[in-house]
Image 1 (tube, rainbow, N blue to C red):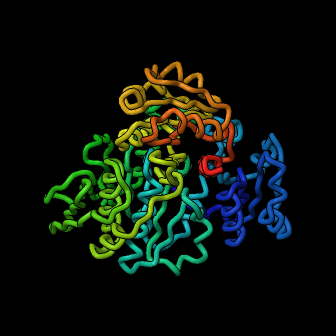
Image 2 (image 1 turned 90 degrees about the horizontal axis):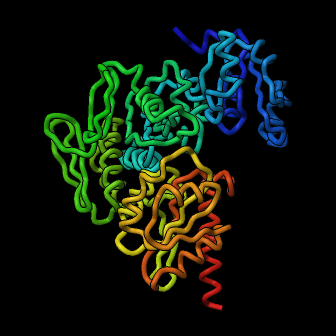
Image 3 (image 1 turned 30 degrees about the horizontal axis):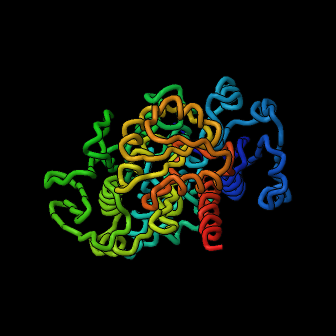
Length: 453
């Protein structure tokens, strides 16, 4: 049985020194581990956190070949950014090394209740909403994981919190060994990250393995209408349905209904700021997850009335005349784009494209042809999207976000939406999806200023 404590007197290597890797290094060093770090990017040596670690005597190697460090290590803590098909992962496995990730390493030291939230789309929104419901219920909450602050950064301060609400990615789940949160939620599973998995089935198995260590002490929450095939002894709760027979929740544009511990409650959604059927599903998921994690109905009501949409997730950024501009830069797969366009009620200029993640963009064809007037294509995947989507309206290729925003606006008849919902990752043109969203916002502001000049 794996226990990270067994490696305290042995040699540990943290591979990949992004935010989570640095936090893992700090944590393990603080716990007395003989730990080193490695990365391919020499620029990380300019990072103040890395310099501080070096000053503390932690060895950091910058190289394209880590065979020697792997040979000399017993435990490899792998960054979620490292593809498990890469040589560093294969080398470690071939040499019989124990491989895990930052999530597992940090969770091993957590003594408070943990709730883990995963899924293809909506997990950041649901993580934040669940955390808000608990906060309004009087709980002291850590929110983080794949969203924001790595779990490793909170281990030393865990006595400050009553409950840990974590967004977890499939990559983090893949490298977990004993990880078994008290409550686990899978929102949905649709094709994504096919550049990292052999096929959709492998990706699906990755998500479902969140429940691999669950027993009768755990609670597994899933979408009632998404038939996920897995075996578990855990307690089961559901969202997107309402039944007196089990803990469940469902919502529409007017009401959130909850059945919990054989009591039914209704919450008015007049003040709820998130719109669209997918966000009502997200709300029902957050509500039942929050209750299973210790929230109360009053806390859920307060969160419903005050929660604001997250940046870059169907975020309204302003209007010019009767054209609204919406930043959905976080939409990095076809399913999220389908949900975005289906939730809008006027003509759309849709900005699509970026770095291809191996999708069949034809999955969007019906929704896009039904709702979109103009298709504005950007980035490396533009030609592939154009081939696969078979769009019947006007298609425009734009070399920059600035031109995409301008063309999207110009080709609407004075009314509708310019929607950035790209279905791709951002790394061909931008640092990340947040940077892409900010460039979209700045392009909107430039266009608005130019029209006033």
